[in-house]
Image (tube, rainbow, N blue to C red; front, side, top):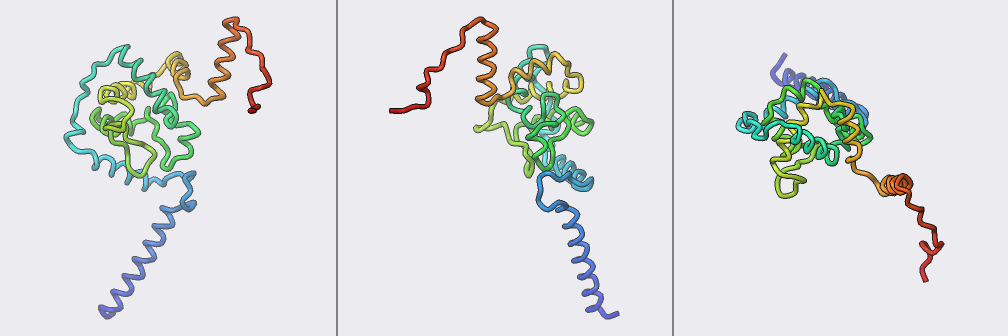
Length: 205
């Protein structure tokens, strides 16, 4: 077989293989409901590991673990992170189910075996091409100390108690209807009389 035929045969094989690979990667089209294949998951984990600077991977947590640290981090997590990750870190949330790839189970081996420095770097910088935002820097929602506290809490997630999870539920973000319902419940239990409707709330003159 001539060199030209060999080249054409190799080109055809490459194109067919590329097409099959693209079809495998883009299973279910571009739907965010799809579940990543094992190859995508493996490649993503490897890319994440390689993207974190060595200096960051080796960083030690400067925040000591304590009951106060855990509570601060627990309530911070409930307010900022649980909408995707869930209070227990399992990712079983409406927002989590709508992401591609899905949030990892923070209690699982693949997260828990990351170094403290890697966890801190991910919290601060986010993960590109996923739903994980960067919480550090000028546009972040907390200080580096908050991020280091979150690392301590992530380590604690496999041992999270029912009482701790129930406390977190009170700090989860709530919509207007939930807040109004809570206010009515508080008023009821505190003996406050319900405010009568004037019938004028929705009339403008």
